[in-house]
Image (tube, rainbow, N blue to C red; front, top):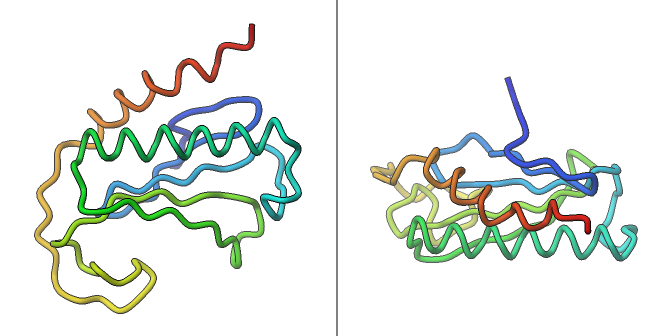
Length: 128
């Protein structure tokens, strides 16, 4: 069962099930492209991406953060934000590329990251 890690009237965040810490940020309205969004939604999505990226760096200390907007299979605007590690199965290639090795990643628990992320995202819920 999928559930949103974070919900806001302008969008929501889901965990992408993978060995990597990987999030997907969706617009609430099913825009097809970032350029289709109104300014408030665009600002919200980019703020979420920034907070997710910074929190992934702080919590996991990855080699690199990858962000991507595709939507070829699912034409509902969403942003992938993932932490990458030299030891992951695809590094330095894209996670959609050719597997480079078997991975033996040992990472801190996702629950701790999720709790920290929700604290960092909480100010976005302030509509005053």
